[in-house]
Image 1: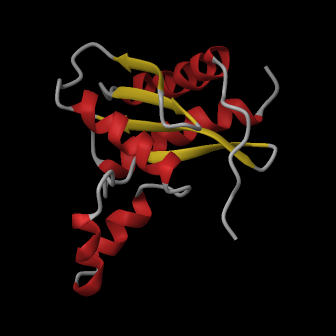
Image 2: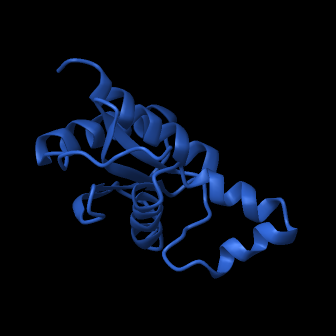
Length: 140
C-alpha cells in the first residue's frame, strides 16, 4: 500500500527542518545544499551553505523530488541501480535521482513533502536529511 499525500508542509515547517539539517551538517563540517519540496514536488526552500559546491543545488532538488514523487527514499533507487541487471532500468526513468539523500517528509502518516541534501557522500547527505525529518517529529 502506498503512503497517501497530505496537506503540503508550510514554509515554517520547511525552515525548521532545514535549520536542523544545517545544524547536523555544521556539527560535522559538511558544506551542503538542502532542498525541501511540498507534496506537489514544488520547491519550498533551498539553502546552500557556504562552500557547498554549485552542482549540489540541482542534485539536492532532484533527490527531494524523487523522494516525494515516488513516495520513498531516493536510496531505494540507488540500491536498484547498484544491483545491476533489471535494476539498471532505473537509470532510464524520468525524474529519478538514484542517489541516497532524499527522504519523504511524513506527518500524521501522510507525505507532506520531502527533503534532499547534496554535497558530501550520499550516506552523509542522508544523515543530514534525517536530522531535518526528526526536527518535524518533535514538538517545536
